[in-house]
Image 1: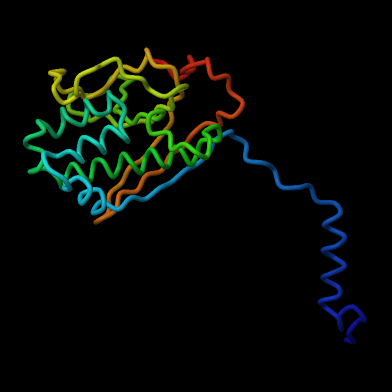
Image 2: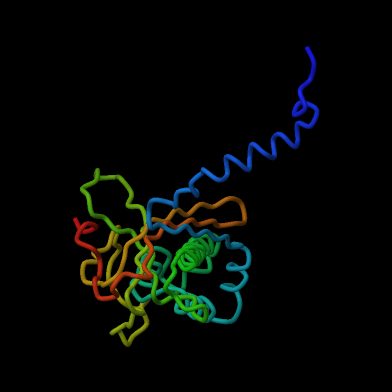
Length: 215
């Protein structure tokens, strides 16, 4: 059987085919959900070295005050305090803070309303939030809360001096903001976090937490 003219030039034939098809194809469908994904990785050793600097744990207080809001710092000290014992827990405390740092950075990267000049540490909270009933010994996973405005503390004293008791979860009903999903993982010397955040660029900033996300 002889070869046709187009058979002698398969590349030219394919070119004509793709040109004809491309004129009838629709553009790709956009992603159906207004969700944004952020990720970050943090070196635990760098956090540990920072915490171990200075005298009387001054860098621990300085660093936690920079990246954590007041409720987060209360949770940190309830878990790893008192301050005079923190030097014996630097490894686990560094892992914790590296995970929180990575989670906040992941959320910030996913947000489309933060200014480029801000890192948003005081506008993002990472705390265990419990809505649904759970079993007695079931742990509460942390969630992210993107506040409508930076958190302003009404406490004048240092957080670690308060006797607030250990809390396994926090009630966030009094805070205006948007909850988001986060996942924090540790592997060797690194803490990795992923955040799934609703697009907030067109949401009114006075809406607070939507009724759908409340218990």
